[in-house]
Each structure stands twice: as C-alpha cells, then as structure tokens.
Length: 248
Ligand code: NAD
Ligand code: ZN
Image (cartoon, rainbow, N blue to C red; front, top):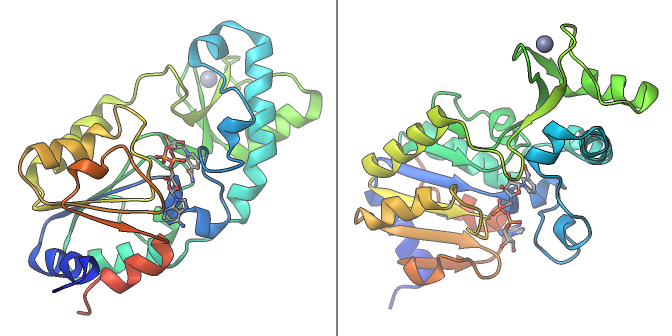
C-alpha cells in the first residue's frame, strides 16, 4: 500500500492548478515564531484590537512597542526550503495561486511571482497613513517611534499604522476576491503550516474543498481542518514540501 506521502506526491503530479495556502508554520524554519505554538506570542500577550488602535494613543503605543520588539526578527529572516519548494512548484507550471496569512514577505523574497501571491493579512515591512494612505517603510516608522515613544505620524499629519490586518480589522476586499476565485478555479488545494483557525482566511482552502477539490494538509500538529483533509502529512514543512514537489 502506498504511504500518505506517495499519495500526496501523486495528487501534486496530477494537478496543474494548485492553490497553496500558508500560515506562520512555513516561516518557523526561518526563525519567525508562530503565535499559537508552545511559548507562542498569544500565550504571553493580548493582541491590540484595531478599534482600540484607532481610538487610543495608549493602544497605538502598545502596538508600536510590539512591532519594535518583533521587527528585528523579521528583518533577519531569510526564506527556507519550504518557501523555495513553492517557487519550484511555480516554475514547474503547477501553481495557480499562493494565498498566505503571513506578513513576513518571505514568499516574495523567495521569488514567488507577485501575480500569484495574495498576502491576505498585509505586509509587515510597511506602515500606511490612516488619512492619505501613503506607505512608508516600517524601518522609517519605527525610527520615528523610537525617537520619542509617540505614535509615528505621516508627513501629512495623519497616524501611521503597520500595513498589516489587525485583530478586529476587515481584510482587503480585492485580496479576498482573488483568494476565493483561486479556490474556485484550482484543481488541488494544499494548506501548509497553519492551524487553520483564523477566519475568514481559513475559509479559502475550505471553499476549495467544498467545491470538490482534493485537500492536502501539511502541518506539524493538529489543525481545524484535519477531518476535511483527503491527506494530512504531519511534520516539518521544510522537510516535507521539498520532497513533494516533482522534478521538472
Ligand atoms: P498558527 O500559529 O495558528 O499556526 C501555525 C501552525 O504551524 C501550528 O499548527 C504549528 O504547529 C505549525 N507549525 C509550526 N512550525 C511548523 C513547521 N516547521 N512545519 C509545519 N508546521 C509547523 O498560524 P496561522 O494559522 O498562520 O495563524 C496565525 C496568524 O498570525 C495569521 O493570521 C498570521 O497573519 C499571523 N502570523 C504571521 C506570522 C508570519 O508572518 N510569519 C507569524 C506569526 C503569526
Ligand atoms: Zn498621510
């Protein structure tokens, strides 16, 4: 009998329009911790809510302080073998879209084409102005924050906000549309390194499954979709993904 790994390889070999959905677990191999794992951020810290960030100077400061603490790890991180395997999948002509919840931009730095990439939760490398929507680099915004501890402002006087989706903030409409279109058009969906517990993001792979597409999950530990998966591979994405991508 074929192992689940063999079956997963076969699914990928037969597919030509793969939707890949990734989460924090694909980047732990690059040194960026996930939030829910043991010792993860949400076991130690209450997230700042979008509504509070908008209303309160204290909440803005809390959020910027958290960004100031976590940004150096982002800057130091480089793509790993799992990110690179997805670039190989794209080069082999099998990738329809890569929808990520990650804000670390490591899929971009690995070489995933921006046309294929949907960053559902934004990018942690930038901050945006709440008034004029101008974007500045996160480094520049943090430099302002570190100078006096006041929430940084845009040249226009508006408040800057990290260009990531906060808890309680709606996702960008265009990104969601692109992601759900890919769920409809794909012929295989693969979730990698996600607990599949954050909505509406997790509904993207589930929509593909509901549309009758085979569903492969690659994750270390349980996910909220394990029962829906056709195949679940439990383990390190950095080891499993490169072994799954067929040679050209
Ligand atoms: P999550 O933390 O809920 O789940 C991550 C999953 O990956 C866990 O089940 C964990 O056991 C698994 N995992 C950890 N390392 C792995 C590895 N090497 N190989 C395979 N699996 C591994 O993450 P989520 O589902 O992405 O939801 C977290 C939310 O927080 C997202 O919305 C995301 O925007 C944000 N976030 C982003 C980053 C990032 O950009 N790298 C990091 C942390 C959190
Ligand atoms: Zn502005």
